[in-house]
Amino acid sequence: MKNPLKTIRETKPLVHHITNWVTIYDCANITRAFGALPVMAHAPEECADMTGISSALVLNIGTLTSEIIDSMLLSAAAANEKKIPVVLDAVGVGATRFRDEMAAKILGSVRVDIIKGNYSEIAKLAGENAETKGVESTSMVMTGKEDVISDGNRTFVVKNGHELMGSIVGTGCMAASIIGSFASVNPDYCDAAKDALCYFGAAGELAAKNSAGPGSFKVNLYDEVFNLSDEKVQAMMKVEEL
Image 1 (cartoon, one colour):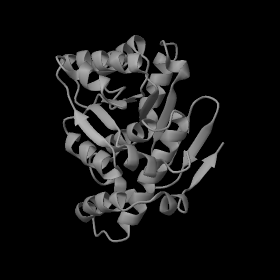
Image 2 (cartoon, rainbow, N blue to C red; image 1 turned 180 degrees about the vertical axis):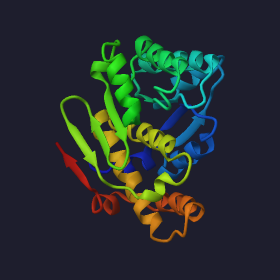
Image 3 (cartoon, rainbow, N blue to C red; image 1 turned 60 degrees about the vertical axis):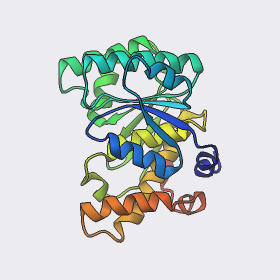
């Protein structure tokens, strides 16, 4: 997509999150700074209805409970029916049996369009859940020093970013929110995830220039996201297609 940020800011897509309680405030703020509209409706009584009026659904299993999984399944089913993208941030997969089982339950019950995780989380899912229904058509996003995005046919390596992004809690969760925002306006989910991480990484690079440490970096990160433009980021993109 040529100008995804402009499209987000013009259309203001609603991005529904059922997400990590530790980082929910950061996810809402970064979504808003990019120009999308965040909503966080976890209650099973309303979550599917909220998804029904949204343009993307972001699921994050960072602070997992059985009740949250029920809401995630209800919302994902509504998203599948509406044909809007579902992003799963597989936080902590591989750490506990419950987390592994719940991730497998999500992947086996509904269509997930984009799975995001670090290298160990993606490796765990790929090793144990490769045969789970729907995974073969899912875009995978592996975040780290360099981010890898693949849909099985195309693979991109994104090299934008700064080490200070790893010094504050929540940048990984924020990345999932940004991916959801970009996927809400671009049906090519592999391309959308690639762009999302380029734009976020570019903002991190710009924020680091005027930051003395994690505190000032976090403030500057929001400001740089708010002041991004497609032209600015496209001049900074560091992407390799394998």
